[in-house]
Image (tube, rainbow, N blue to C red; front, side, top):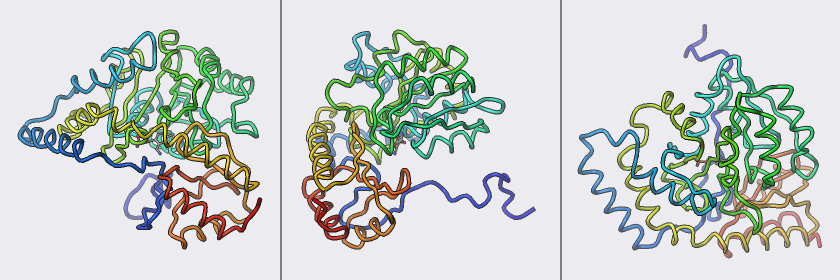
Length: 364
Ligand code: PMP
């Protein structure tokens, strides 16, 4: 036995994570480029100070106040509304989804998604000893619904992971796709629609929250990391049937949301209008970026998110490296030949366009 006595299947595996490099233009992890205002910082600091005064005690294990505020925020996206019993939260939506796999996956069970997709999904499956099956997306990264339904019927997954918009392609799912897969999965499984980038959807693309009233096996996850400009906060959440939230309580660690996290998340929610205030600008900047890349003759995936997948490059690593040398960090991810760039401020996007033109030449 080699030391440390790591599980056999984890030996030699690199921990997940994009390079954290100190470069002027950081467009690699789909963060919101806009930080909070002075007034918002002051309110967050005051809330953290109040929480600090209680740190000798464990926090509210059921985070009741936070669930109420998250329910009220989500209610804007569905006529049926969302009640606090339908809400669950954890340290980032990564932790929410790991908890879902802990509760609904496990030995002898299967999780399904459709590649190319978010690279953490197979890791949640691996870490919970859940069998992992990846179906495929069509050429334009949409889901072939007949093939997807067939895969679900054959594999009988207890968890289906459906990001909408998908990472790294930016592709959103129409509500029909979610409905078809909820029906195909049935109540032997849960269908998780990961709306980490949901607030960036183009006009007319509804949230899967609207389907919660129809499908008891549907879970919709969100995060404060992206549109909410709170990546450093680590707060992800979900809406689902109260029975699903109750089931997760069995696997969560006690007091998993610290008093500081709860207080800061509540303060951020009080400033939701400001923190989300740049979403429309970012969507416009995203659409302009797609147009510019297409005008430069690149292949570009349609995007409903705050990033864009573009290509194709014979040597994408060389392009990524060339951009880095010019102070622009993007992400080398997705299918071979493609690169992903997050949407930043207008200045950052101008720097990206200039660097790409410099590295790859004028293509129009
Ligand atoms: N889902 C998707 C599709 C993502 O891209 C990410 C982050 N990159 C997450 C979930 C997790 O985000 P967080 O843990 O910050 O909420």
